[in-house]
Image (cartoon, rainbow, N blue to C red):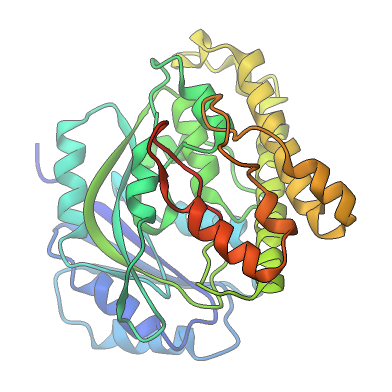
Length: 355
């Protein structure tokens, strides 16, 4: 059997400032055979023109496919369109503001070769700022700490409900046959990594996580689902609310898919042995949490105070202080609580991070 083809999909939208570095990272991949899909979602700046220029000037071994959506489709439909063009056994994804290391695809295939049941491979990343300088962040360690990603592990539903689940999109690779079996995304769904990670388990695949760093994730004010360091309380709250609304759209979409009888009766997958009532209950819980977060901005101070006192949602362990208390404090108190929350709680091993 020959070396399998991989597809590298680079998604872009209005990222003229960063797109050259992102495309260079894709073109520099050492793995072969490789096809590279440079896909733009109808940018209003020069993003796609730069992609075309670089593709035209490329003289390397990789096959390049160019795609530009007109009009703009939105994240969910853009993902559907780009993935439909993929011919590789695995799909490695990148964003127009991030930069992949040259060995990224090679490392993905090394893991795929040793884990034949894998449908998702998530690898490590480094954080960089707008200028490309590396910045310190312990998020990778926290991300890997409590991932449970096999349906054979009875704790996976609890981990999913708490949020300790799945691979993150900045450094992920998807098995193409798994993607083909997943539901097409709706236009308003932005978190394809959440949806595909969840569906991979239902289809009987495992999710592999590796701490090996293969991509630079750029943090800037235009991040859709990430964050930038700031001490501005109002900005932090607005970003948290926007993230909650994004989560809400994701899990409502998943709930709709789970309610389809065709989805809960797929033959030949491990989904048959799963407890669908518990799965649906976990999705409903994620919806409820997202609804509360999305409405937080509109709560009165008294209601915020009341909602601040609840246990941490990590494997049933209680918080050492109210999880959301920092959100109702004046700014100095907020910053103090944020610093305390970011430390590991030694007696329980819990990370209480406040984004």
